[in-house]
Image (cartoon, rainbow, N blue to C red; front, top):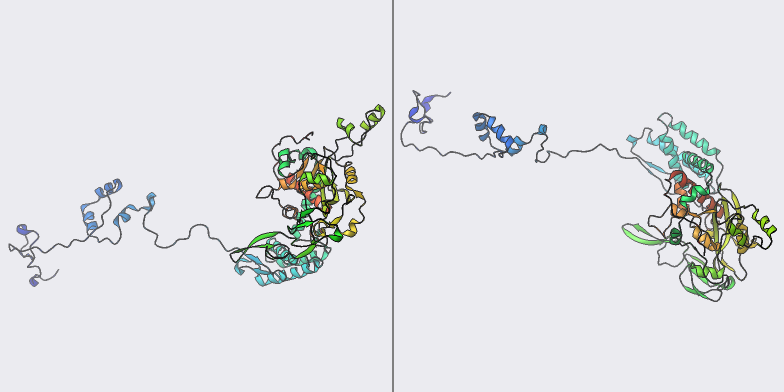
Length: 553
């Protein structure tokens, strides 16, 4: 390999020593030569495991020497042990970050301004229709919704923007790249054919899909005629009635002895100040907030603001009126006007004790009375509107609909003698002084009229029904209450608003008249009935409850 006369190894002892058989050995055979120091290279050997032992035992000595001679840059134990094929995994971290799970594409988002043309904030690559085309079609839809909602935009300024966005989204999802433009044009033509709505609950308010869904829901609800047998599992038990604040027995003592509290010091329901009850012409002025104080969070800071004016909770009231008071204790309500049970059915034996039944002294009259036809309905939905008076909050309007939603009773209530109206509370009651001036029947006459429709066996449906029964001074036990069917997440005594329930489950808007029109007790009665129908159709039937029969005092 190289010339031997260079004598490069003459100072190194021959590895074979005296056994060397080479004729011209390049190493030295002199005695006493010192061997050069051995260089030791560190090697990371694998741990002795059963699997490794068998593998190492089967390797040749040449392979073993080769492994010992290799410098270790990485742990050999990891090289020998890690074997993806046998299910084991290496403890070495991955060479680079790896994506796990399915790849998700960004979701398209929609954005609109409150009182202007809505904007589409969408990734253009995700839209099968060019984004400028969609934005132009959205503007056309918005312009036509503005024309359609001309009469209601003042009270619902964002309605046109919201419905234009939802209508465009409906068309986009149900069309292709080639049919999108014609589908939008068809929607615009449909908008032009709609009648102009005068309130937010009008049938022509909404997108095409929403109107079709509402029509289908109304058709299903109208086809369902509720019966007392169907509603038996939904009626409140006596324990539930007490929990929700129902009056389940007549308070002791004579009723109606103090119909008015003129001259008595009360606490104002609106501002919380003490005041002396006076007639309307002499009543003291009250500065208050008619909305509720709710906690909101903005820029990481919590603030309590009133819903009526968005002012802080410690601010001065935004409206002026009169001091009023509200009573809830059954004993106090009984003093203003007496409570009474709903009448028993005419066919029952208890009918002979009712005020309208004939005397038992005359057998002929008794037979005639027992043959009377009971006009009471099996199921009714009831709602009342109240006003503030010198005798607290009193009923001013009563509305009743039957199981089909047909109005069967709607009357204004004249105040009892000695009771004057302080505030008609038009924002919520919907009753104006001009309308209430036509009221003819006092509460006692209204109760006798209701006896023709409601007996102790009638199932009465309502929302927060205990308030209506209290203001009617009616004790009734067969009740279905939507606050129990659709409970608040915090539980009693918290309850969800009727307007919110109707919007969520029926897709309708009620109580949209604003501060000048207020609520309608007929509309609320029908909405409550429809909520119960919806619950019967779409929710599981509740388990049987304990008896809800009348308690005999």
